[in-house]
Every structure is written in structure tokens, then in C-alpha cells.
Image 1 (tube, one colour):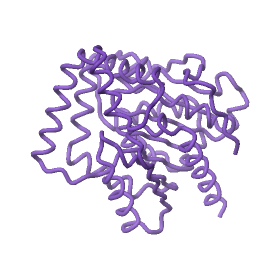
Image 2: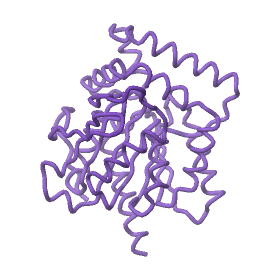
Image 3: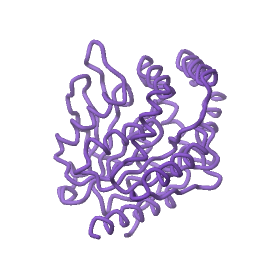
Image 4: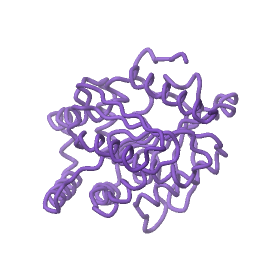
Length: 303
């Protein structure tokens, strides 16, 4: 399939769409809103990570758009989505509920699920809820790792401190540090700004709750069980220079799936010298990997 790379890092422009859910006015973008022909294409549904909006998917979405319907959203508490519930709930299940509402609203029938970081946990939940719709699942930079209870407490404390002091990231020195933590390779400056602004604008309660529940041993155990048993063809992607989430955990996840479910298809891709954001650090190479995975899923469905 032919890639359609953008000439610069500007955001993919699609009409603004809002879906009212139980707890939010959910912002989403759907290429079929502008291009009616896209309704007949398989959909790629992008699910963003913690304290991020859907904007960072734009370079990758542009490269896939000739052949797929592109759907992305800002989850509750992030980006352009606005909370309306008095007491909003921030859990993997609640995030999956709003994505499921969007799937139903758009009447999506053929899905490639692509989750990144915390969004991978939501993608794993969706892959089981919508087995009849999911053509494939991709998990990016969200492995399992053997942290001790003390290490988990330290990480949780770090997350709470980061949220409470996030105003510091308005300063250039902290903005640069934020970008270096997220990406091992240079990314476009405008996306550095987008990532920092997304973090600053994320609902503080949502950021803290998501950051801490993502380290909950019971939730991580459920995530592991879900990923290793995802019925659809599975692609696991990690940057070996990831400084945000230990990349070794993706190896563990892949090896566990092979051992416990050898009958299920899985592919593991490691990018050398790439950090937590392969969709921005190596968008061309990453798009080629995704296209190959989607083609393999298509072939397996026929066989």
C-alpha cells in the first residue's frame, strides 16, 4: 500500500465532531465525516496515552489515510473533550465505555485497534469487548514489569508530584526536559509544544487517577491476562530507548503470549534508538510496520 506522508508536521485537519456520553462531550475525528468514501474502508481507531490528546497521531494518520478510515478521540479529562458529569469516573472500563459508545455511534464494523501507553490498556479491553469487530490489535509501549510494592509506591508518589507541579512545565527548561523524557529521537517542535500543552491542560483529577491506577498490581494483572489472550492478530511495538515505561516489559508480554497462547498470532517489533513515541520519532517506518500488520491480519482472516 502507498504511504501518503505529510510535507510538514502540521495537524491533520478534519471537521470537529462531538458525541455526548454519560460523562463527557467527547471530541473525536472521523475521516468519513469529510470523505464519504472512507465509510467503506476498514477503520483504524487510535487510542491515546495518559495526559495526551489525539493530536500526536496526526503524522501517522496522514500516512495511513489513503487506505483506511481514520478515527481518533480525546478521552475524558484530556484534550478537547469536556467533562459534564458531576463525579466523572476515570478507569479502564469507563474509558472503554466511551470508546464503545463512539464505535456504536459511528457504526464501525471493521476495526484495527491501535493503543499507546495507557491507551493500550483500553485497547486490550476493547479487543475483548468487540471481538466480532476487531480485525487486529496493536499495543505500543505498555509492557508488564516486575516492580516491587515499594517501587510502585515511589512511582505513584512521583506521578502525584508531577501533576501537582505541572505548572512548572510552562518554563522552557522543563518543556525541553519533558520532550527528552518522552522521545529519544528528535520530534517536530510543534509536537513538542502539543505534548506539553496536552499535559498542562489535562484535568488534574483525571491525570492523577489514571497515573496511579496504571500502576495498580491488580489492574496490571488484568491487563497482562487480557493482552496475552486477545483473539485478533496482535502487534507489540516498543522503542528500545524508552525512558517512560521500561521497554523490557514488552518483551515479557510477547514471550508470555507465545508461551500461554501459541495458537494466537503475535508479532513483536523493537525500534532501535527510539523512545516512547515511535509515531512521532519514526513515522514512516512505523506506518510501514502497521500496514504490514494490517495486511497480515487480512490474510489470516481469509485463511
